[in-house]
Image (cartoon, rainbow, N blue to C red; front, side):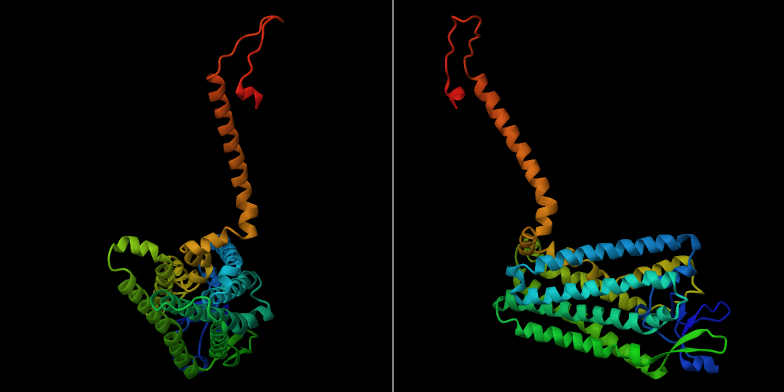
Length: 378
């Protein structure tokens, strides 16, 4: 059950945001330990188990992370909408990836409202059903799209597929990814129930057997399988393209390697921590709680840093980024100003050099004549 504000209960399960996840049998005195899917619940609420003085620090960090994610994905989406990118297969995938990332960031933003007004019934209902469903749907869709991008890179670079071929297959794949992710997370809506006990406290109840087996299946489909595909794509690119002068080749093909490496690293760290630690908020030290949060954030890092892992590492995308109005307005204005200053300095130096080479005669009275020079006639 998702238990709210229980200070006297013995908590042995995963708890997040003041909500503790239990099974129905727990309240029937049947002990059962749940290895819960920790990031399906709002993680910011656990700040209440840390030092009270750090609550505003956690909130500030969350706001900064959200702003970084918004800026990354807005700029990335503007770049991917350029004609020479959006007409490619990868461009279609990347546009959808940025949209899913933006939706995920907006969903994460609701954690602030839940942290401040968590006693409201609607926000408890949102924490039980809406937040885990939408956040995981966007995360899983983004993971599947990143896998498709890695496969497309191998097809274009190693098997010489045309990158401007028909985008119908990519569109159908993205619709399929979104559909599968949406269906696979319906348990967050239909297998959970928000109920109240005799004291009026609310609980988010889940089905015991369904929760355990379904979580294990989702872990295999959305964590292990994408990591395996990314690793295979990395190794294939390394074996085919990077044979001699490997340092130069790695830099040349970094736009294929860096995104997959970042995604594999984040997914592996998050998955390893979830299934290797026995974490409890009320029984853990403050340092372990902060360590817990750091690992929970790994699942969101790839979609928070879309611009850094997909645009900055790709020279072609960087050139397209220079063409968007955002860059022209905020960056080119400083470039033009600097260019005008440099042009003035060059003209001034040329003028000083030309005048120093000429013989100048001082005119002392009206009878003196002025010798014209080519420079002054100009």
